[in-house]
Length: 297
Image (cartoon, one colour):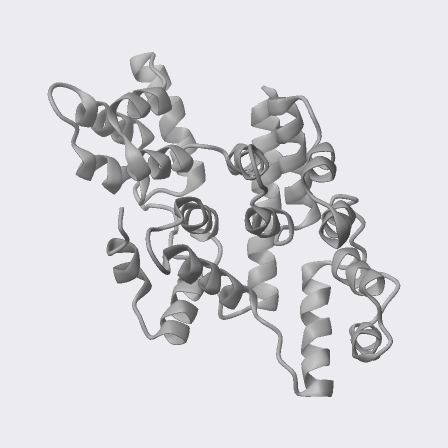
């Protein structure tokens, strides 16, 4: 088993855990993409090869296959494509496609740990740091998923995410990300009610807020915030609302911020994108699918 195969296996197990977490903690959350029935990776590989042979490219077939298969199924298609044709599917598509369409399709073909590692590199490259991308990637995933991203990043770029964070961020934001990358989430010694009381305390400082949000699992924090809302009548932003707002921001104003749009759709489609879509439609009184279709690109 190659190192990437091992990382993919660990990531897949982590995603199964997250999907179980969604069912346990957010019973209304639903994906927008489920495994294709009667799936045949060899047949799909043949359709994709035919779509790229000869003059022109059949983009409709590429879209039909790759956007209606789960990531695990897309990995199988790539393997079969290599076995049958002796060619790399991603490289063939890269030669045929361009623009944001190329970005989307190639993103669909990458194991998510590699995709996120590349996104972290992109967010910290050049002048300025895309703090929103770092928040979206590092602050919304459990320890198992983050460990896999970290291992992939180190294998791909020969440096640690911690090194990059220390170099490209500072102050409280750096402290937050470094605390998250310490992988110390543990619920065993606390109760949600007690932690909610800590948050309610007017004397709580930033260090203790950071300790709370980085020391407990998302399941536990969900219960903490429920307790907090009951005790204060204040509301916190739900995960679907966070992603709905991020999608809106990516498409708002002149032009479209491609990568947040791609990241959310590609990474959440098998987890809770259906719920995010409903929240978006509710918040902005617009249809998310139509808004994506109407983006500048």
